[in-house]
Length: 154
Image 1 (cartoon, rainbow, N blue to C red):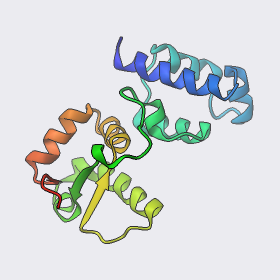
Image 2 (image 1 turned 60 degrees about the horizontal axis):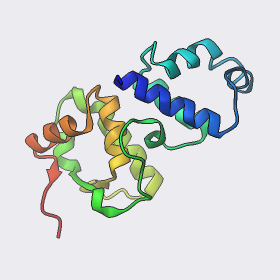
Image 3 (image 1 turned 180 degrees about the horizontal axis):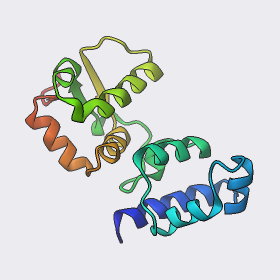
């Protein structure tokens, strides 16, 4: 199954869990989400951008992790957390602007503005990978190589 098909399957599962038809999605979104377009995302016939995926997850009232392929979130355990050096992240080029914005949204949500380090969960890593048009393992490797991942957390 392709990545688009996996995302589509997750989107369909979330929509159905909310008891919505494609037409109801279009109606309740006041036409922002066209039934034909959402249906093509769900079938994997059409790629969905990271931004639109995050917006659709928000529309459904779920975390981005619920619509991303991979394991389902495990309820916020810390064993799958990755510690990031935010000062090092700031030194990276424009390619990581979207990552920095997402990290800022996590900080706002948590009320954590120390600007030095941040622990992200597996679901956040999956969302960041989609934003960067890659897979979580590859993004993690890139961030490690750039010195952003803190390996030894006391």
